[in-house]
Length: 138
Image 1 (cartoon, helix red, strand yellow):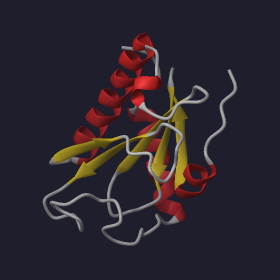
Image 2 (cartoon, helix red, strand yellow):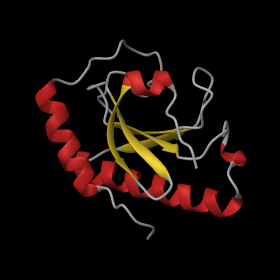
Image 3 (cartoon, helix red, strand yellow):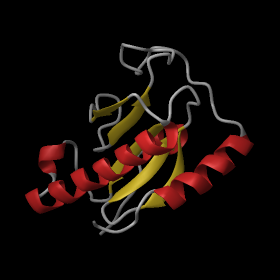
């Protein structure tokens, strides 16, 4: 299996860890705890492109990171989306939302320019998220 991350995802995110089926990335926008899962399979554009057994396992990984965002960031709501209009490689956004976040109650996409994390914030978040997100299938 050959896996290559789309250049836009590479530029806009911070690597957290690889799960059994997906790469977990942190969107470099400090306004929202925002994870992106990229299934590590070639030639996928949409969720229905995954074989059914892989779809169920990827959905479990989405549930896993959603629970981490609720627990560790006290998220009010989790937004999950697989749009892919700008980046054709299948990737799933998992965004922690708060009633006082800058885009509430609208979508985060294009609402405000990104505010990148500081190097210190990246270091802290990488360690805490890597530890909190389960690696295996559960």
